[in-house]
Amino acid sequence: QYQPDWDSLDSRPMPRWYPDAKLGIFLHWGLFSVPSMGSSAEQFWGNWKMAGELPKQIEKREYMAKNYKPNFKFQDFAPQFTAELYNPDEWANIFQSSGAKYVVMTSKHHDGYTMWPSKQAFNWNSNDTGPGRDLVGELKAAMDNTNVKFGLYVSLLESFHPKYLNDISSRFKTTNFVDEKLFPELIDMVERYHPEVIFSDGDWMPGDYRYWRSHEFLSWLFSKSPVKHSVVVNDRWGMTTTWCRHGSYFTCGDKAHFGEILFKAQFTWESAMTIDVSSWGYRRDSNLQRYMSIEHLLKYFIKTISCGGNMLMNVGPTSFGTIPPIYEERLRQMGKWMKVNGEAVYASSAWTVSQNDTITPDIWYTHKKGVTYAFFQEWPISDLILGSPRPTEKTTVALLGYDGPKFGWANNQEEGMLIQVPAIPINKMPCLWAWVLKLEFLAN
Image (tube, rainbow, N blue to C red; front, side):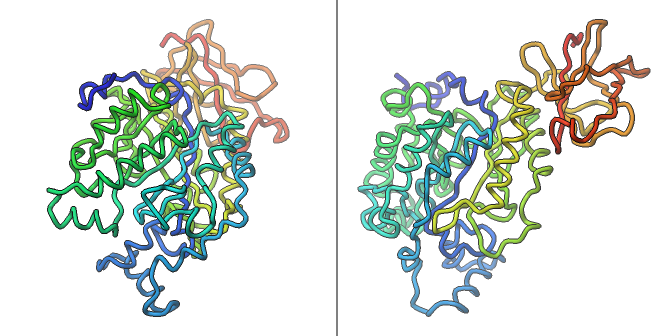
């Protein structure tokens, strides 16, 4: 039994599956997928209605003024959220092909619209308004037929919920929104769908976990819930009191990359990031230049795992229920690469000697069971110099996925080793975008 205090909650052991997984998929899908416009498309309602002067707020006000009648409300988008092409089995196939080991789906974003028939969100959920379907439940059922674990994102705040606005007006002396809406909804979500990841968000106002009753929920989750032994949670349970302090793993904000710091402090961490660099939600006005190439995506991923973290890569589905082809291509490319190089990824850890090389800094390392792996994205035109490894007479060097002979090597004059990379015909190359050397029998 874990008590509702951080000393007790933080004492819970990390379920081993999570740090071994390395790669997850984030899904930002909801009513915001209908307008699907502008940067941070997932925050369309808030950016449209809040009287700010940020570019993303101005662009949405201008878009609505130009294209919709003055009395059009965000709720009027609901009938257009049809999801008529949503095939969760197809989605599950794409996700499994990516090499990812977990998927985190948006159950509710800051607009409060739930993607399942929540009793606390009458007429503001995907079953009552819009698709007429339990979108969370259907994907959960499909993912249960794969080896990919299922998780859920949930926003604690709801920007325009009357009870939340009343709590704000009372300066959070009242807690009616949490007591009557949020808390029972969280319990219902877990009991229905058994998520093995809960990615909390929207905890910044107020930043104190006690308003959100986060410690009480996590005590129940870790002690009594149907996923008490396997679930992991992030650190967003009260922005000023829990970020980078409490949770199964740390995110420390979106697209954070404090990997080396967190690794040295012995924290498990995750970098949640977007393939479309300007938005979590799908946006119709995006262009090819805004999407990460597979080379860029792999560079981000390799750096992340070399510093001991997981990467949660975000996909934005459409309002009619499809994964856009550019996202599908990136996911399948990742899976193709992982089939060759997964040995150096899954269940690996950061190499305590060095995260990246001391002589050739664009080479990054992982370590597993006494074996060190070196990742590189530029194929060398001559010998490859590694400064961090200390070879022995027994040291061997092999290219993962290559069925030819092991590579020769020699001691480098300064430090490390000089690897003799042979000329390999393109049709014999194990993969196209990044390669991994397997270094065995090193002295360090």
